[in-house]
Image 1 (cartoon, rainbow, N blue to C red):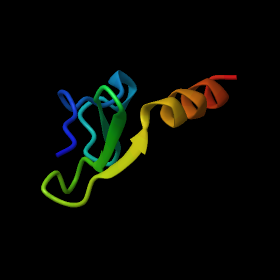
Image 2 (cartoon, rainbow, N blue to C red):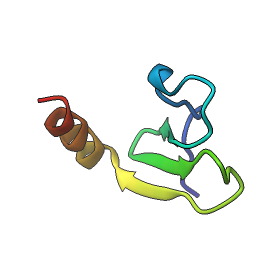
Image 3 (cartoon, rainbow, N blue to C red):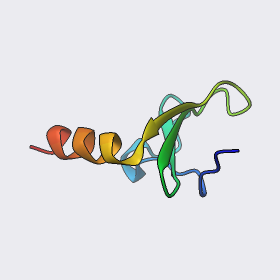
Length: 58
């Protein structure tokens, strides 16, 4: 079973529910829709997530 840590969202989203939430695990990062917390979770390799975040922050 793959587990991830606590879910969080950007502080820039404020009280909005129209965003995604992210939870980090040792090997994977989970991404889910904040409007549907019981719905599907996209799991991506932690290294791939780190590469994506670095690219976005350029």
